[in-house]
Length: 236
Image 1 (tube, rainbow, N blue to C red):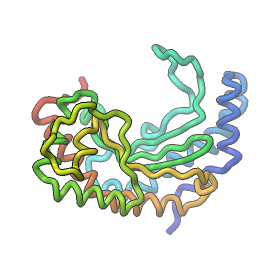
Image 2 (spheres, rainbow, N blue to C red):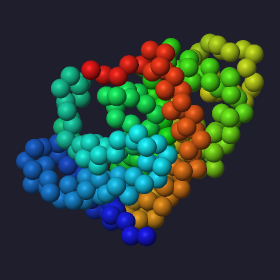
Image 3 (tube, one colour):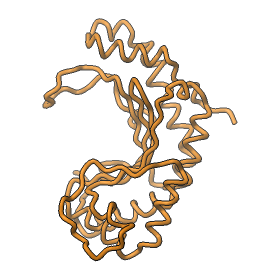
Image 4 (cartoon, rainbow, N blue to C red):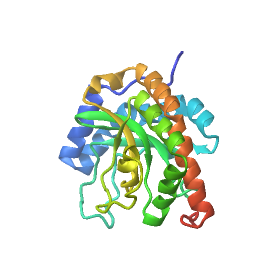
């Protein structure tokens, strides 16, 4: 199958890092087109190439290639860091965030020393995550099957923030890590950046996203309940 994506070369990643190191508008302007063609355009092509499987997973996905990809130039307003340019880039595959704020999403990202992709649900209110925990307790077999699907996709469970107190002391042991999590992330990471320079990456991500579909379905159902019960509201 022929893809739009033609790869991200080591040279393009090196230039992105140099741009971040110089953190200079003149340097950026001098190399702006190279950075666009070497980094931004391939990532937009990636969105196009993954859109068929993503729409099949969720027909409400908002996959505008321009809006889905992060910008090289950072918005430093209200940010402690005044560094103007990124050395890492990402794209989120998700529903339109104004209509579905905090919806679960698939993602791809890379850094100077690694790349990764996976499936995430982040919510900013404890009450919202309680919906997810409630669903896990009500449907443990379904949830654990979804966890296994993520493992089969090559994803590992990660959480950066856990509740210190055991809020569900009587819950089955295998559910404990998930019931203690304030946010969920199932991800794959590799240090081999040369793999970004191959269309095989698209096939790899398509397969992984499809295999992990049961967890996305679980998450999106939880999110819809969060919205229905008023924990999350569309942005004005």
